[in-house]
Image 1: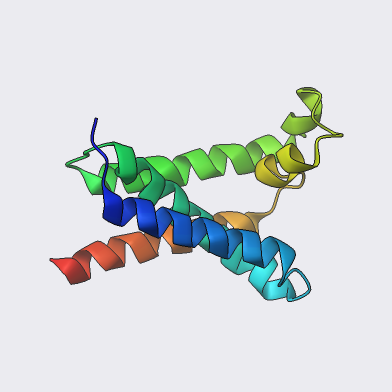
Image 2: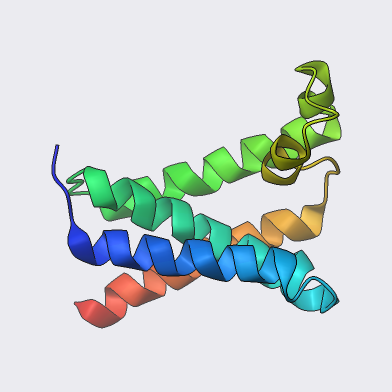
Length: 122
């Protein structure tokens, strides 16, 4: 296990951006509905790389995209409510409560941004 300060600082920045979108910019629909979903994939990616040294970053990127899709499909079945979290506001925000194909497209865009970023660095 490692600790990568660059990815840690990036994770903190992205987390603060997500919190800002959810609180201060919640009235800007496209920002909250779409851009937040693009950023969350990147946030999870940088969080993972903060603590893990992963050689195959493409595989990590695909895994995170698939994880986001699983969470999205779980929303279709109201997974958070099944877990008894309906009254837990934070859990409902994190896990979501409604399925959307557009969200999956946003996750794909976030994964594409990660892919593009790594191609540019090489």
